[in-house]
Image 1: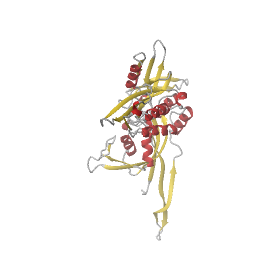
Image 2: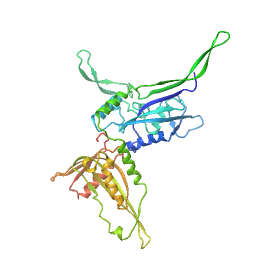
Image 3: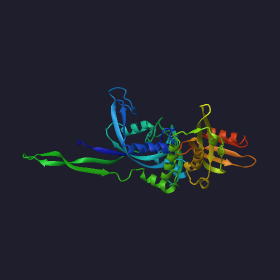
Image 4: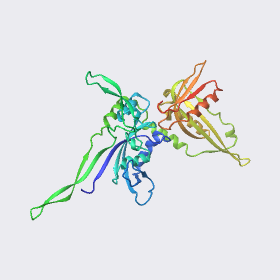
Amino acid sequence: SLGNIEKEMEDPSSPPPPSWSVLGALETLKNYVSDQTIIRHYLEPSIRAPKNFARIPGNESWAESLLRIKNVGDLYPLVGSKASDDLANSLWVHPEAVPKECKAIVELEIELLTGRTHQIRGQLSTEGFPLVGDAQYGGAIPLSTTVTTTALDKDDDNEATKSQSLPYGYVRFDKLALQCSQLEFLDPDIVLKDDGTEVGSISDRWNVFRLQDAWWAPHLTDHQQQMAASTDASDEELVRALKDASTSPMVIENDSAATHASPLPPTVLLAPGVHKYVLLKAIKYSSSIEDDSSKTEVQWFVKSASPVECGGPYHANVAQRLVNELQCKGYDVTVTGGGRIDYNNDECAPHAHVYGFSYGFGKGDHAKAASLIESYSNNTVIATFDNSNALY
């Protein structure tokens, strides 16, 4: 074979570890690109699959595996709308095969620097980004022995729902979300020798072949056309700004100005209806001039708001004004997560239901938010919560 072959792959990669926020995971991938990070793992020698990739080799026989992420595409949420449900059903062979913690997908362009078996599948899975449809490396759930499918009745052109028995652990791989996107190699020259025989030699001319569209491209296009934005660049920038602003705690001297500061915002501020909410943790580190002592004050806040009230459709918009107000009072503020609150302020039986998650800040501690709501209202508001990812 000819040398100097560079192969690039495309891959819509799915779920990051559940402790990550979706935008945080996306930012990690983008940093790999901007920093031109070479991702390094070591492959354990074995004839079996799935392969074992690790950051530290078990011994000297483990093969070094190198790749680089060259491009990160748009984020496509998989929950929260019919368009997202349709996208998930298009990419996986069956709804039961979609990983429970998968909230979004993103298309990656990968450059292979070594050629190992299952390298892209194994390395990305080890990084927390398994490929869509890849049951061996966490990108799909193996189907049960019996699944219900919808098939076309050939006799009368009607759709019929029927059960299909499958071997235990069997997964139908219609299409794995991994395709070669670009292939480059040097064009050979054919040289005629004096004795009339032909011999090949490598020229300096490159052949470059580029994939026009991956098989999943039409599904992503359909999703874009159907769905109103769940997050965009402005949301990412605002989330990043709010996180950066909370990295340096402020120490306030216990003088008269601080003593007579204006009161804090309400611990709980809910807008009637179904709206996005954020859970904030505010810490103030204070010191006393008189006795040289110091103390730490911790406050929690729950806020939900409509887009009209907070100036935008994102969790970062809900958080921004409250974060700024608390920081002006000397608090180090962290948005610990978010979701949605369905608040019914009926006078007879007020109720708040806390659920879902935030793409920018991750899932909030819904149990804590519900507890704060009940405590702040002196138990006049009944607060419930649901940690299911399917509810958004």
